[in-house]
Amino acid sequence: MSIPAMFPLPATPSELQPSDTNPAARLFEYIERRIGKKCFKIRAKRNSVICCQGMRPSFLYMVQQGEVLLVRANPDGRETILSVMGPGDLFGESALLGRSEITFSAMATKRSVVSLLPERQFRSLLEDPTACRYLLETVSRRCNDAWTQMEVIGCTHVRDKVRAGLLWLSVRYGQKTGRGIRIDLNQTRLALMVGCARETLSREIRRLRKINVIDVRHEKGRKVFYVADSEALFRAV
Image (cartoon, rainbow, N blue to C red; front, side, top):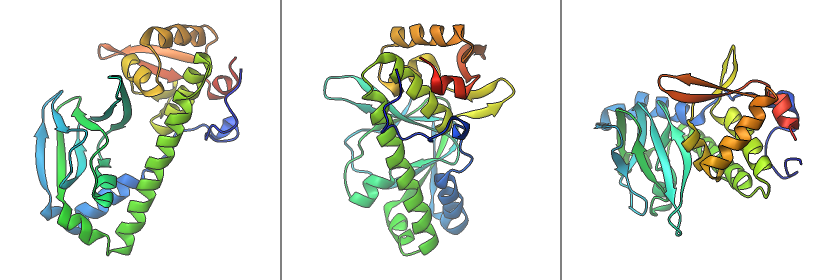
């Protein structure tokens, strides 16, 4: 088995390292510096909903503290996790730009603080060349993530799906550590992001652990994944 040729990951295994650049964080910092006083903050409790799929937003949402999941409900009732937002991330920009409805729900997974920038101030940013550049970079990355996730979910073979998903998530969300690249997602979230059953994911994870490609550790009462060998995962069969 092999990852389909159109899969938009780096072409060589040596390039499969977490990205240190986050255009959303640069836009966040720029907004805070320029018009931060025009934002107001909300405090979200664990499991509270910040915005709902289908609503028309009036704000740009910027995560200051905590963690927020973006989840899309499909017509058949299944859910897909689109993104995991941490401090410095933002969401809602595409709906504001298109004057359209939000295509996901946002839920705090822990106590979080979110800054809200009113739509009027957001539109004033569009006249600022620097803000526009950061915004375009943010939207571009969001589009790349969406296409990549579609490729992962669309993999025919489960083995390819899990392997490609782990590679994508290690690049997108991974943190370099002495044990390997840490993916701070539990098994349920990982399954919802790559589009497979939790039991299927568990089976594939066990196989990858046996060949020392993936390590699973219990940290703070939950499982955390480590990609111990990116090159081996890239070539795993």
